[in-house]
Length: 240
Figure (tube, helix red, strand yellow):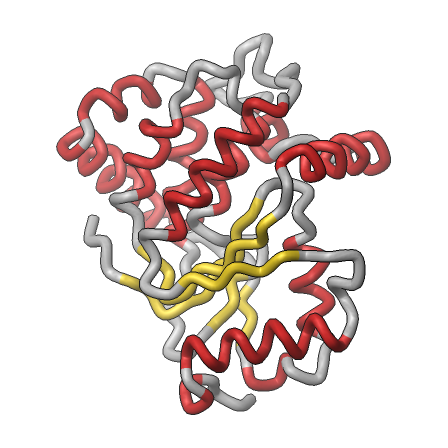
């Protein structure tokens, strides 16, 4: 699997960083007209199986020990299947396109933060990331791991929202009794934060966005838009 950049923008950050809230707010701002937004699309079964085979084979060939460690775990196999599924739905964008809730790197971060039992190393997950297609721009939403964990716990209690792996795989062939009982810890959030910093070095363009208390107002939207324009050049954004 080649590691060339795809022409899309992916937003990454710890669970609870406010990524989805900010992006949905930005979509409704006056700056959104010069960007394109692509949500989850229908998967092609043939493409899914092709990506699954390619991902597993390449991972085993290039990072044998990391691959064997992840593939020996039910949650590790679920992660690779989820990545293959998302790759099969990746839009063929000819302009700068935001991936909305369908990014490639974010499942790696969520895996370490939300679904890690504590014995999966950052090294193994990072090894997997090096064989994935790279976004043309990676937007890193920075937040203190302690704050992110607190927000995550509040969201989980108020919405009943569990991590993706519990929801998708609890009744699947890789289910184990502990799969739905994982409690994220501050150590797992710090591990995910370390992975995020490593992922930022893989992307051709990385923008760091810190969310404050007024992250969804016009000023923050303007600041975000300006950062994108400086990184891409104003002629790179296509007007709808």
